[in-house]
Image 1 (tube, one colour):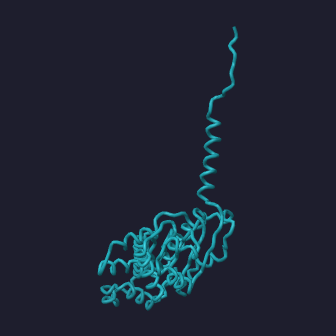
Image 2 (image 1 turned 90 degrees about the vertical axis):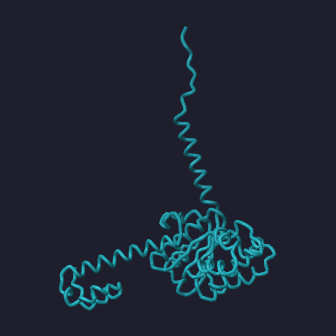
Image 3 (image 1 turned 30 degrees about the vertical axis):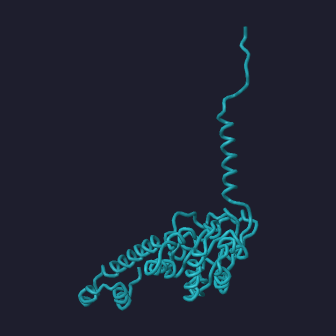
Length: 261
C-alpha cells in the first residue's frame, strides 16, 4: 500500500471532523496505525451514510437492472436508458418520464435509477403516486408545508405508477405543487406512467392545472417510451406451462390392463 502523505491524512481527519485527533496531531502523525485507522473510519462512515440514504429513499425491493430483458419490449431505446444511468440528467435538472403499458419494466428501471442515485450520494425519494397524494391529501397549513418538503427537498424524486388511478382536483393541485416547486428549484423528477400526456386529463378529470403541470415537466425532459406486452403476463404463462408439464410427469399411467382369468 503506497504511503499516504501527511497533509492528505490531515485533510481526511478534518473532513471527518476528528477534532480530538487533530488537537493531538503532532503526537500521532508518525504512527504507523494512523493511515489504516483513518481509512477504516472513512469507509465505515461511507457505509452508514449509504444505508441511511437508502432507508430514507424508501425504494423497496427490486430486481437489478442486469436482469432486465431487453428483448422483451417491442420498443425500447437501450442507449437512451444506459445514458440515463450516468445520472447526467440530475445535474442538468432534467425530468425523466417512462411511458408504456403495464408490466413492461418501467418500475424496475425507475427503482434502479433511484438506487444508482443513492449509491452516488444523491438525496433521493421514491414513492408511488397514490402513496404520495394520500400522504398529502388530508393535510393543511403547516403540516402540509412540512410534508411537501419530503417530496420537494430531495435532489431526485421518483413518482411511480401515475395514471393507474383517478384523482380529484384537490389531489391534482397537490401534485402540481410538488412538480412546480421542483421545477423552480431545477430538481429532477422521474415519473412512470401508463398514459401519454394527452390522456392525463383522464387521470385528473376537470383539473385546471394539468396543462401547466405537463408544460413544466416537458420544459426539460427525457421521454422514455416502451412498448410491448406485459412481462408479468409472459412469466405467468411460462410458469403455467411448466406446472402443466410437471403435473403430466407426476400423473399415474392411465393405461388399463386386463386381468387374466
